[in-house]
Image (cartoon, rainbow, N blue to C red; front, side, top):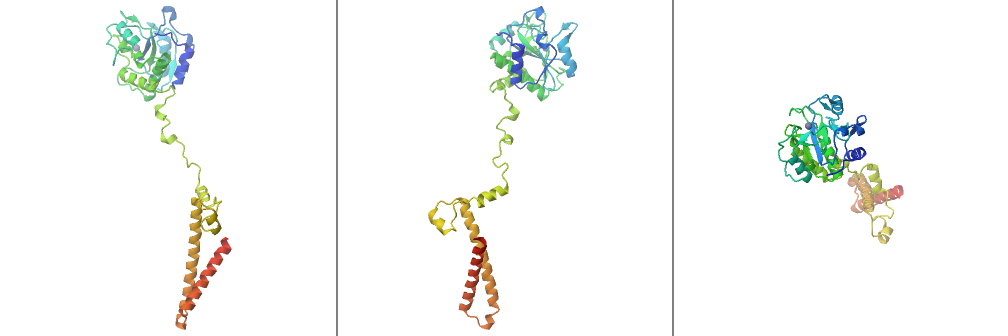
Length: 319
Ligand SMILES: [Zn+2]
């Protein structure tokens, strides 16, 4: 049992729950309060409109018709998931219903669903005083689909009310669970809706199951913006402490960084390449002299000289 939320409070609750709200005219003051009480409130009733077309549906639930003056609910939940607020206060949505059901909703005492109602408009309890009402744009023929955005909005609206009043999802019923005259809503089960509202209530109002922060695609890539050039420079150009190829540093800096080792390996490979090239050139040159009687000592001396020139060349160019 609770005092009704103010218009400002329900707007805050709906928006916190991620509901897209359309405020229709003077909805905050549009009601049937002159015809009877509104409150204390015990729950929320979900309906279908038996209409097609969002604009005409919003107009109909705001204005009502000859036999049933509007507003016919507090908010109309459209196919696209937007909630058109058309009234606040007593509205013509619930009519008469079963007092046993009201007791079970007040106590949130039923298990899967309330006892099937045996009373309705002609002989029931005044539901307009006790329930929020939400008309949902649907033909109500059991075939007209309920788009995901619309169903999600229904869940969010009900969760927002439950959260604001500290109710469980058992305070949310369908019109067919309230009145023996009614079949709405058709096309989804109220048990499933209550399960989905319960799940939402386990999370903060801002919960968006479709874009939870654990989604890997939204995590920051630690390598974002790092180029191959950055990696090359990090490996080859940040060696401030020398490396193994440097004899002095070898003794004074035993804790080389990995890039120092790589730099040393690169230097050694360059040196070996050049020395092998020098060896090959020297041996090739000597091969032409073999017939001329070059002895082993001459060959060794020539190769060693070539290697020495190669090393001097490296040190000159790279030192
Ligand atoms: Zn209804």
